[in-house]
Image (cartoon, rainbow, N blue to C red; front, side, top):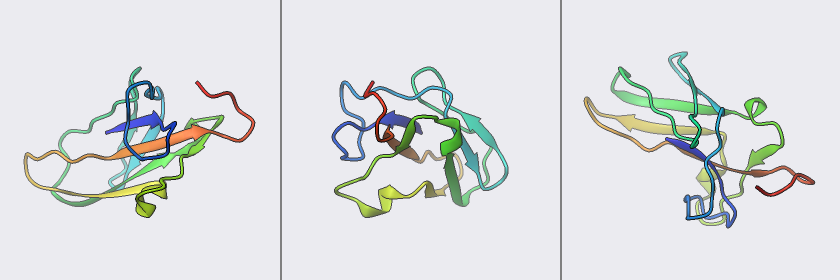
Length: 104
């Protein structure tokens, strides 16, 4: 997954929209994941089935969730994904500087 600054509020990372390092995502099984320097994260050895990841906004001072103009469910702080054995799932979070903060 990834946490990135969504400048055009489409919910997808475009060229020029940087990843956010050190963002924290909590999985429903208790795993705490921190994004790398490029805003990317992954988790291994997760049981298959429905899993929820929640972005910890307190780990992102100066940021808030970016409004998604095209997909209202993308406006949530949590993501639900269905994992299959050995499979991959996308769990991306779009953020934007909070009101009054500088745009990166």
